[in-house]
Image 1 (cartoon, rainbow, N blue to C red):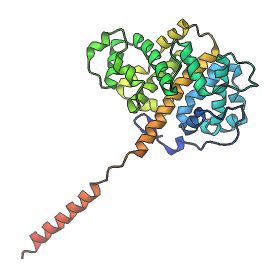
Image 2: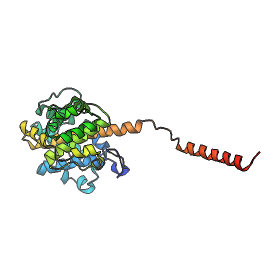
Image 3: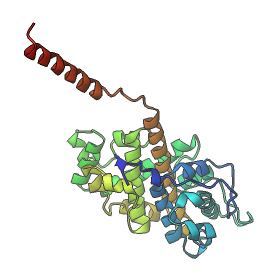
Image 4: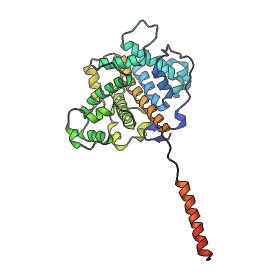
Length: 295
């Protein structure tokens, strides 16, 4: 699969999504559905792995015909993935009288934020950013000086004095709240770190193959600060072991989609190369006429 930077662009990475009724009870009025249907196969792979590995015997997704018949073409059953995430969100909220229905993604995000001691009000993207900033603070504590330097340089910060600071530099906190390619890179780092801490390995999507040197240093098993935070917050429910990495990965997917759309909408610079070649050929012809046909 070909890539541009961190973003998968191979056409085969975008297998058509099915728009029919879900095989699992699904709350239709949920923005998560459209996000998952726009995601690349490789981006959905981490979500599916999380649901299966951390969901264990309670995971219904792997027992569905759509899963068995189409795996690993995850976008075919993107709606089932959404329904399964909604279901685990309901479990974290101790909702047992929903007739198998879950809760929408925005409720899941706000519940995770509350569990981490964060404000859960405001736009959902702001709540996602606050969760990322909280986890990034714990990740920063576990990084070596070289890893801290690599992380800062990845965001064009050259102030080496920040490496020794115990507190997370404000510029990195800001990177969790902005849009653009830098924010997408930050979401990749955090999703990978959470996967290491909670799943025992990083994400396997194709973007990892094209990480820059600085980011590659950070895609080791450096997510234990996140695991420590979860233990400190007494998050014993297995449902949170599903919803927290899912929130980080969906936030990453949101930013990946936005970055792809931004690149698509950018005006293309005119290709002047062929014109330069044509002008050069014409000049050569004129010069040859002047040399071989004196007037």
